[in-house]
Amino acid sequence: EELIKKLEEAKKSLISEVVTGKVKVVKTDDGYELVKRKRDEMKDSGVEWLGEIPKDWNITKLKYIGEAITGLTYSPNDIVGENEGTLVLRSSNVQNGRIVLNDNVYVNMDIPKKLITREGDIIICSRNGSRALIGKNACIRRKDAGKSFGAFMTIFRSRYYEYLNFVFNSHIFKAQSGSFLTSTINQLTIGNLNSFIIALPNEKEQDIIVKYLCNKTLKYNSIIDKLKGQIEKLKEAKQSLISEAVTGKIEILD
Image (tube, rainbow, N blue to C red):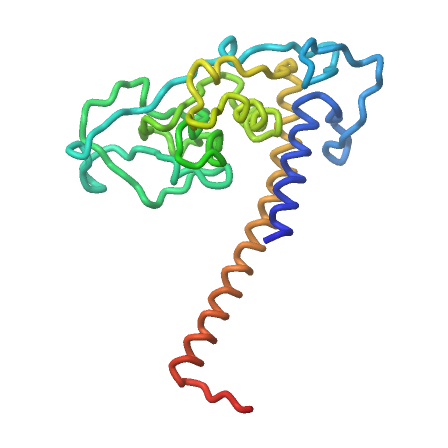
């Protein structure tokens, strides 16, 4: 479990370095590699916590490159069975940057077209009893399009979704999410989200960054998933041993 935490942190740190322009992704004959940028390639971002960024990158707020949309409000009377309505994505359906379709809720009601998920939407947990869960997110892929999302969730819709998917899973997004939370309110509002500042490269460089990070994060996720599987098997084996011992199914010799 400690190793998983270290791997998650290493993955997030790599993403953060790349999406802030501190390192450059260069295409090679064998794929892609990271190169440290030279001082003369950088400029002052004008944002204290961000520092220097590449000269050809722009600083922008999210509100200028997409739209934030608050989720669907429904009542207990609107909830129906699986085959009787539309699935509503909630916080429990977003796990480790992916959509997980268990613990599902379905509703039968008129849902505005705007509140139906599209491929490329980034769904974000914007309200939760746990502060640690505020800001967790996942990108909607084709198989998860056509669903809705609850009032405690927010969708960010942008043409730059592939790049933003990594920005939203970096330290800079987590830090800005935390700066808007108070001791009494665990909520990331539309206004808060729209005010988030990011460094934005041109679309050609975004494409290179996305390809590199997709490959790297896939490797991290593969190792993490294997470790989680091993942990689950060890826990099951331990529980099985305890059960057999306390029910007398095995004899314990002194």
